Length: 448
Image (cartoon, rainbow, N blue to C red; front, side, top):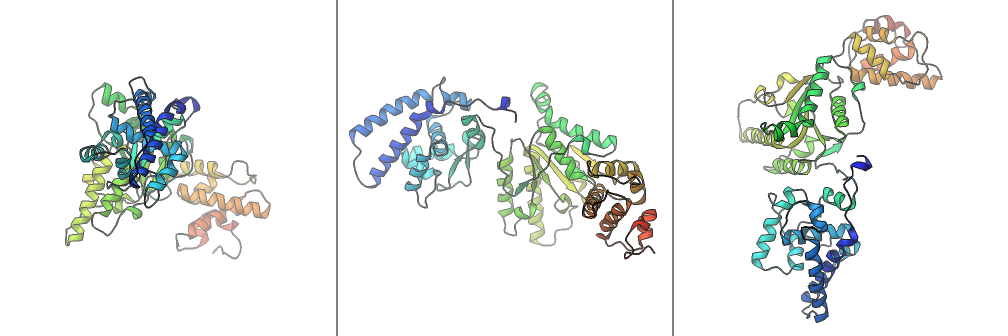
């Protein structure tokens, strides 16, 4: 995010009465737990602070500029309680002393006590913190569970608006951030495949025009399927999409989400999508065929439940407000009924000779010295590698040349290719695998 794009910071000094009021409320709660009376001067101070707080929460106050929507007084109380411990360390220490086990973030139970709510008001507090309530629906407050003792936290977006800093996007549960910032120039694909990737971007970039201005049907996602053999550029294409949007890319580890215990998989998926919904990020799900394969006969209860898990995942993906990219090496095993519900399907072919030449040219280190006979077209012609294999072979050749203090030449490139082919345990001689490059291999490998 550019500095000019950052949200304007709120005058935090103007919110000081909110933090002071919370401190007085905490002191009153401490006295109440000890069976002691609150002094008249503390009650008078609390009344004066309440008047100041009411002004801050008015239509022209800082909270209105910060939140941008009307809230009930109880909802403002919750916002102040969760934001206060993030911005005023003293409140975090106070919360720790009031809760068992100690924690710096207030629970719903603590907020209930701080505000001295009666039973009816306590029900209103619980309703305000429901997933469908304004505070969580509008991404102002986060809660990891719905019981009264779970910590309540200010949403990163709220803190960003308070401080004027760009929000720090934490990885959603079960996902990890993918490093790198690939660009369109890094992709070597047929023109029609590149066009499909651009069209997938259109679903994201022009959603407001189609849905809000033109009245188009609102859909989730968008969701794309990237299909093709390993090393053909599926993850790189996902990185290009994320870079074009200026968003981070997160790879979802389904192994961390799928559980053998009934109901736990759905809970894990709900946490993932609740954390990512509507946020500027791209989610990538690898090996989609393992989940969305053609459905077989249900022979036992576990088969029926597995289908329920898949249906739940599909429902959450389709309703998720943000781009999801599914990748697979085995598109033929995908259920056709599922693929028809996707916005875009992109096939990633193995590169032809021209594409392999372009890949060799790009993936050999740009500033490395090259021997005169190193011809990318020759390398491409002799070994039909994928893009990922070419990357590995080119880097292997570069490290060989660096160790030998020589330019990258055909001996290093041939050995790099041979090492890459050997990973697949392909049978056959070096001459059959490398053709005219076989003569550049070390003698011990053999050229027969």
